[in-house]
Length: 328
Length: 292
Image (cartoon, rainbow over all chains, first blue to last red; front, side):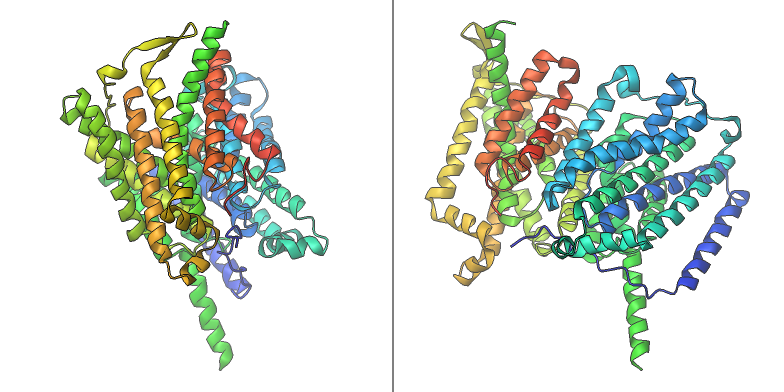
């Protein structure tokens, strides 16, 4: 008897109308393009934070939802990306563009090293090793004063002239988010993405028909790390500072909650979860200092009553209605 | 670096390993029998430490306070665990790992803020009782009495667990439930009651760990986050559900960390993660045989 298999996720069904999806996405993008005209600076900043977190959560879902792997410490690659930008811009005289290009590559490299060991393990053991190695990276960042400035973090990171106003940062993060999402979406629909689903649903059979399960998992892990690194770059653009707490495991847990809240089965799910959590934490913060209590209660309700997530639930209803229509 | 320093550091590490063992034994029991990844275990440990502080303060931090705290805090945490198990956990036994994990994580978040509401955010400290203060000489090395006390408590707990699990009927039922729950049900034993009992026992151990660590450290928010990762690593390295594996890896972690502090103080914080990482890479399914 093994509970190691990740049975939560049904295959994302292709029933949802593609044109409808594209239409919603297009309207969403147009609204977001116009949004800064109508919002105060604070809300523009908040939306940029949402974009950053949304990319991080979506990249995690490639491993968690599509790969079915219990990846517990994705925040590490986010932090590594952010720290790479911070270190290159403050400690070297290299141009900003180099820092931005290096960040996802370094994150992907770290993901490759961690993933190399993790994909050998299954289920919970996989999760625990991601946690152990991720915390190791955190501890190194926390302690390596000469390079990372340790506990204090790095502040006032210089950015190019054209990225100093919050509106330009907003458009930059939006642009990078949209491009990354398109690439990630294509990856999930590519032969590789389908193979990844196969290794998730039946690793033994995949292996026996000649699919290299470990290599597919490792590839997904590295891709997810790469995009988390990009999210790290966005974080630096928005915040212009980094701190070691970015890499602590509770940060990663919050990203997991976002994925679950939006729905692991749906590509857009983690994004929705990220949006809800970031905005909610702001709203709750206005009324009480006990945001974590609220988050905990919310998570409790979610786990007990809506484990498929908000979008997952809506998709279920939609699929059911489509099935019914087919019967008549 | 003389022998005495090494020896005293070894014993300090060993006594820290005992705390690790007491906490992770509870976690591994829960892992083995309920098959739940209980993130809330660290929170229970923290609550245990806070309750111990309150009990001890109630008695003016005197000697009786300490012993009473040691008795009361684990029992209080045991009851809290029982409520958690009956109220929440029993609804998610058949769910996915991620779901179970996030449910217990929600308890971590809730417990963290509740502790903040009840006890406030300032650091608390608890006195070591008169009888256990100071230190004694061991082969030229000085070892604090309290650490020696921990070195006694650890093996006592281990022996107690061994006796319970292998010599009593109830313990045998626990082990049977860990191996094959359906079979236990078929034999007419109510396995959900076993689950509740094991979770309560795990909570008792977490509370005991918290109460034991309380006098040696500042009791504060966030002490749950650091212990739970260590405990998870210990449990996984030892083999999920295997108490003796947890004992061995607790000692490795405790001693490894102590020597790390001695030799490379700057980076001692990364030692446990390195040990766990290396051991997991060498023996992916844990040092000893996993319970399932």
